[in-house]
Length: 249
Length: 334
Ligand SMILES: [Fe+2]
Ligand SMILES: [Fe+2]
Image (cartoon, rainbow over all chains, first blue to last red; front, side, top):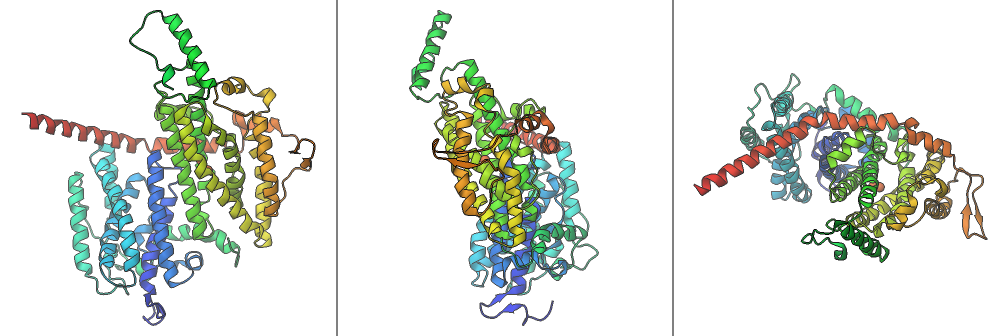
């Protein structure tokens, strides 16, 4: 990332780096959830997953528009310019993986937006609206974590495997994001960890062991370093838009 | 329609009761009264409704697939949001319709099993592929448009739960139709490549859309009885004509042509004449030989099978919770 001067839109005082980080999280997770359409295990989940995807897409559009043209940002940036967490780009896997990803992310997003909504920073209006949405996303993920954790032996095994697999992407969430003001990231992380711990205990699932960051430096996604599946996600998402330069849709 | 609610207190003289019930039913339906789930109804009426509502519900959920095919490739975030919301609406329509069918004593699981076993059908239109982005617009404009033409009369269907579900559904379908039209308009007025994409999509979807109204009246097996029961109110050919008359001026304002050299206004009839439909193709797709029959049902089955462990877990969890609640009630009593 270059210095603050180039990433800060002084006209509206919107910290571009932060708008991109939060906007890309929402954009990419929404895209992944959109991949579930027609594949969900039960009709009610077609509706629920689409609801969450639509909320996130709405957030992404607001956030990206704060710092530029939403479509240029979504469809014309290269992989290394995306600032989303590696967690949200991880493939859907089975339903348990999707729920584990939702659980980790929605708890994070809910805590973060809760903080931002309290302040008077540039993201407060968006956060105040989004925090109601993230409360629903969190409840949805929590309910399913309980059902899968305390359902059948198979569902418990799958849920445990999913939590273990995604655990190493959760450390990145608490690397401070430039432009979000003086958030207490350590306190945010402590609250997140407490919430995850309490819920997994209720679900009869152990807290995953092992490191919460991978071999890449913590905060990699925020610095534009992503995982292999992300390139394919972008190839699919951007192909049509890029095939018709300058066209409007 | 309380007039036909059976008086279960007097069980003697079965045959006369049945005769009276049937006569009262026919009279009530002929007077455009609504039949409700607790009312007595002929078994054939029930079976016809279950078959039709099941086919309709299946069409909603299979119909998600061709459009979901483009969610991850939508060319703008605005279009992506509209498309996701549309596919979600179709899932919701499926939910309403399976619930309406449940009022006749047939569970969603039973109906899904029949769909997966190939014993119940869904609309053949969804056996055609979505090859370009413009197909999303063509489906909205033509397929949702044809669905509306078919379904608006069902809002006055004699069976209450079906009619009420259709009122909600038709409102949303008309959104879909307008959004599809607007998508095509943007393409038609866009670059040369976009215009060509829109024209190609309309060329491919026009004839299958006309087939959505079903076989011509002289070859339609269920129509007469369904009309008498006020499940159906217009013949297939009437509805098809209505759809053509609506679509022709819309195509003109889109700046797109319809692929039928015989299409022209007939002053005398006050309707558009149109060319012969390839019924051989219709029957062939219906039999399972369409371009995507195997893919659509395969994907549906796969989603169902891959989701089995999730549904089992949810059921097991619900059982455990219920047992816990009972246990707590027992404790409270002690
Ligand atoms: Fe629908
Ligand atoms: Fe629709």
